Structures are given as structure tokens and as C-alpha cells.
Amino acid sequence: MNLSSEEKKTLLDIARHSIVSSVKGVPIPDLEESYSISPSLEIKAGAFVTIEMNQRLRGCVGYIQSNEPLCETVSKAAVSAALHDNRFNPLTVGELGNIEIEISVLSPMNKVKDVGNIIPGQHGLLIERGFHHGLLLPQVATEYRWDRETFLDQTCVKAGLPKDAWKKPDTVIYSFTALVFNEEEIS
Image 1 (tube, rainbow, N blue to C red):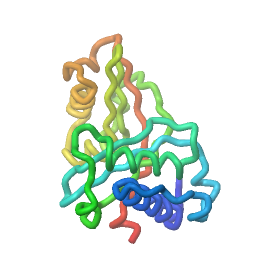
Image 2 (tube, rainbow, N blue to C red):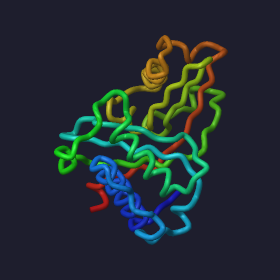
Image 3 (cartoon, helix red, strand yellow):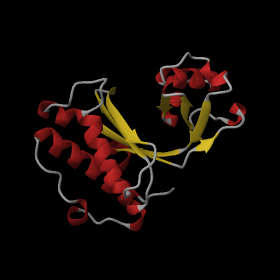
């Protein structure tokens, strides 16, 4: 998927306004009325919103797939990342001026038949076994300089599984790509 600079800016604006409104406890403005929503922003795709503060993770929530337009998915993911990421306390009004937002728009999931085809930094991973599942975005492998095996191990850990669970036949592995952009790049 490709988005123009203007479409990326619109999604980042939607994410920021959704976060600010939700943290302040005011209604999120109607997206159709507030923004020029292009056809690309109406596609149904999964997306994650990552919030950082002082170059440290402050929240990251998203949807693997969505039945809603991308602009709505980004808005909901932004609110969830700000208020409902159970690894962090909800964002406060005092923190709003210090956050940086990154959006990852996901491709459809592809079942992995050969782990040798996984390219860390290009592919994200979703690992499922039983009731456990864990997802790591492509940029995580790049950030930590993980090789393929470490990326697979860490996705298993994220799923609450033993790190070598990806080697078991009852573990299902999916890969995906993501269009990743942030406010610093687009400003």
C-alpha cells in the first residue's frame, strides 16, 4: 500500500487529535467532517499506533485487520494506545506536548511455510498457538538489530510462549509488511 505525504499527514493528525481529545475527555471530532478523507484512507486495513515519549515506548495498540475505514482504525488505535495499553498508565494532559506518534499500516497476513523467507526489518510477525498470540511490527527487529531466529524467539515471548515455540508443529506463524511513518518524517 502506498499513501501520499498528505494522506500520511492526515492520519497522523487524526491520531494526534484522537489522543488529545480522549485524554482531555472531550468527544473526538467527526472524521468525515473534520478531514478530507481520500479513498485510500477509506480502505479496510489493520493499523497500529505507537506513542513514544523521550524516545521511549509510551503505548502501542492496533488492529491486525479491520472492517472499518483506515482513518477510523487509526483513530481507535490511537485512543487505545494512549489510554488502554495495559503496560502503561493512561497518558495525562501534562504529557501530551511531549509525545511522538508513529503509524504502521499493515498488509494482509500471510501464513509462513518456510521461516527462511522471513526478512527481519521487512516483515512483521504474528505467532499463534492455542489461546496465545503475539505480534511484533517489522521495525522492532530493526530497532533491536535482531536476526531471524531472535525475532521469532521474541515474538513467541510476546505471545507468552516459550521462546522456541515457533519450532513446534502446532504453532502458526504469519508474516506481514507495514507502511510505517511518523510525525518527524512528515512534518
